Image (cartoon, rainbow, N blue to C red):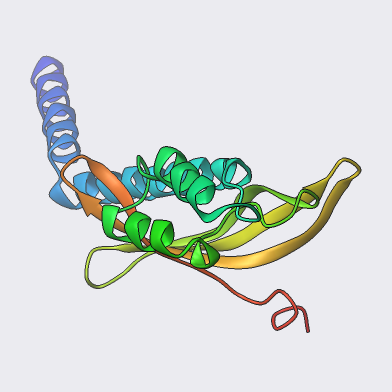
Length: 161
């Protein structure tokens, strides 16, 4: 009798574990969390490259830097638009302060399957942080992973009230 109860409990535990292992809702939730982490990593990498793209000099220098530093992370249409008009591109506009990184506040999956990442570009000088510029990045899921398809900066004065 005791042995039968132990066997039944063992079978129940194994069945429960299998249901959890192959639970489609749990698997989907894990995929969503992983994708959200991928978006965070992508936007953080993009933020680290902002200071490598000088926008204050010759347009051809800016275009080359945009291609070199942003192309692996940003959709080719957006890269081309920024190369054609570097004034629209994010990057280093002055020698100091400079964009040091992007700190994200949120990553939200949109109805169309893309992700909206919101945060701020942190501006630095040799003495530390000097300000923040609010940004949003729209990130699409593609066969190879995730890629930035839209990026916008807001006026820091408009959001500091």
